[in-house]
Length: 237
Image (tube, rainbow, N blue to C red):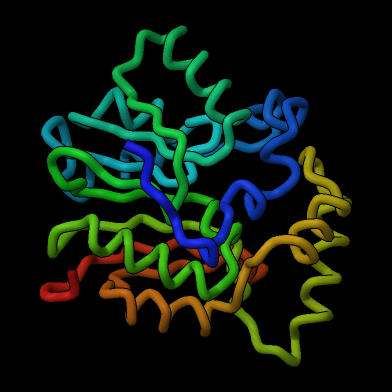
């Protein structure tokens, strides 16, 4: 059934970022970026999730985490609005004979079917939404989860003050262009200019307002990456 969306709702395809609709970029993505999928699966298993658990990966991309998770958890659903990303992921699912379910949808449109997820996972995806829409996405995730459910959220998040921003961003762009990874200064500049990463001191109150307790937060040394364990609080659905 097609659900009609209001005309004022964000078009997530338009907001997803040029590179995520670029077949050449998508073909190289898994070589360019290691999502640490095995460590993330191990983390979830250490928290007690296992063969009976339902996991939804929002912004799954090429499915590094989702494919690994499908080998450990009872049901895993990979959700992404990019048809280019999902074409590659579906090829991987077929090639592996994986049980992973793949859904072309976004933070603002995915409607979960069946048993409520125990875990919602999202890595390096929420920054595609402007802050207003981040709040809506977080509230929708909270509505999807039962009380006590987990949101594992990782993203590019600016954990510094306004007065530091320009110097830190210039240093980050320069460092990314000079390191031994495939990411370039132009990639970093495009991210800051065209995408919607935000400050931790804006994002974290938004997380709490959406109905989550911040159980753990870790920040990279350069203060550009943040990882959260977020617990759905009772009564917030």
